[in-house]
Length: 504
Image (tube, rainbow, N blue to C red; front, top):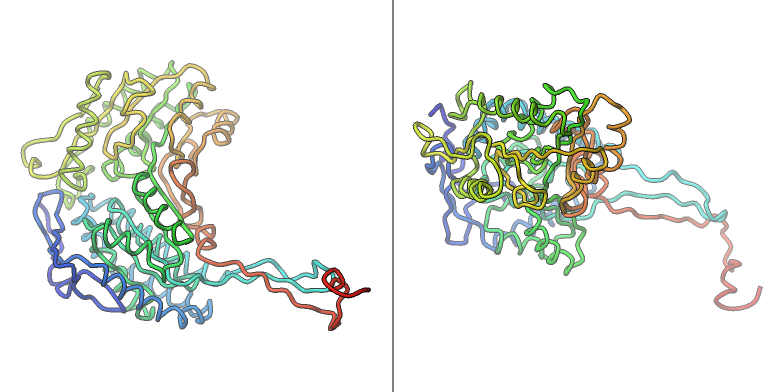
């Protein structure tokens, strides 16, 4: 396997970042960061305890008054410096992300890291735009205006599929608005979140504004969400875990943002560009080895194109090169772990009883057998109510189903509990316009599937959660709207007082 980044020395002081410094966790339990391409441990660290969470929250609480009082321009300047440092360290970030996740280096270097730098630059600009409604005399006797103020300490939880980008999506809008934060990354992938926090400190963001705790979800994660000094929780992960997070957060009346699972439909109408749709389906279903909540998972193809579409997708999938994430010609890396690989394989193996595995459906052997690899897989012949159509597989698996009428295609697209992302493929603007209106999802792409941009919101509906990442919509969620109202009359005994006491 190719050149790998040495992380043990970088994080010799531990994998908790509290009050501006690295330190070990105090749970008494160790955790191994496994390179999923080899199955070997690349770093061992002590997990956080609930006491570490308390210290991180205390550090964030102590840092909050000063950071909240900083002017928008001061916060913006710090975030601009932060973006510059991230860009300078881009290669290190890409290599560490590939190491802990198994992503091909071309994906981390051209997608994960540049996207994070761009997000940081975006929120550096957004920090100057804490805007409320303009002042006016709505009552006639008073001047009203709206302030947007930071909330306090945010406690957020990020997943393992995009550790760097998800850390940025949680941290940046929170601190741009003047909050402080404690982030719990997934235990499997702690490293780039720590590097992100270190870069923030190096850019001049005060100690305690960003804190990272790496520990088990059932202990550290739940303690963070339920902590009395945490005023908001943002969680990205599976829908079942999101329900548990919601239970804890609502019990303590916290503001809550949930970005949960997805089962994105990929709707191909019969006038679509077949070659574009086939290429789009392969790229959108295999990005990050399919471990993406917006990945294309259900291809609904109008019957006249169905056979040609599935044949072309199978052909393209068979051309995808699995290999060492650090090799320049590798297209697809391993899944995050052998457990996840086996989970994906279980879905496919069970589907053989009721559907056809057109291509893939197996783990490669040879030089890759020690890694958590799984071949790109296309399934046809499954029923709409089958497991592979309804459940989130989170692997390099695409299920293709035919439909006849436009009504049927849109109906099938909406026929799961989820509503995160979707795409519609057609040359007819009226068809795609209808699809964008009627498909229930937080994002609908037209003749593409996957691209995201910092200026636009990301988030879902229904079982995919609520709230937005990125964009000014995300930024606003991390602020409290306050109405301020000034009396303009200087009259002691106001006319409305008579409704309470006295006469006019």
